[in-house]
Image (cartoon, rainbow, N blue to C red; front, top):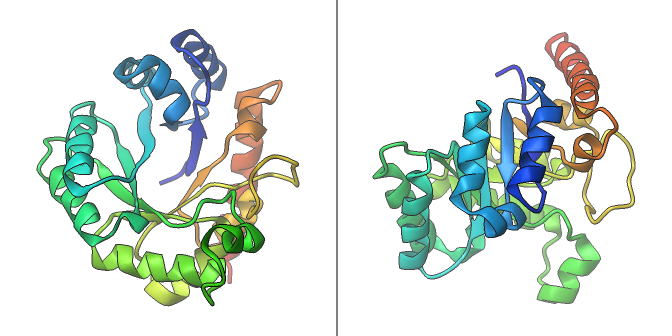
Length: 239
């Protein structure tokens, strides 16, 4: 895989989606469709991205009772998406029902597990869950181990936990890392890292949104980030 960047199509409607896809040109191979666009345009949002030749990561973070999640995964698979996700915190029966539904679909999309959202830091984690005795990093590593046991195809975690996941779980599961930023930003991501550092830590796919989609030249911004990634890969291979 030469281009690990996943660009979110966080736009309100299909017209905005087409405009962004046109501006991304051929610099991006994978796009992410989340709750905003899918709620507005539904399956048509996926079909439009496919018409532009993109692989689609359907980021709806399923988290419900096992049967409901299984049926949602089955429906998503009929759209021909490349990847979709479930919350690991939904528990074994839910994840395994989703796994069975994905495996039974003709297109068999990759099924990955959400660990801890990158909008949380240790303080916010304690606000929600109390003093569990676990840091976010230890919780993410625990959930990654569970994801492996439940035969998920990968995990979503912040780039700050990738190295710890690799140490605990080896090369599997592959990691998808939101919170990747070329430089510091004031947005709602808390646990962030630069693209080069994320690759050096062992990340497989990098979700990079606003630094690309809000750039004056999204395709040019993507190419600059890819250069940083390639530099990191070369440095890593030279070790």
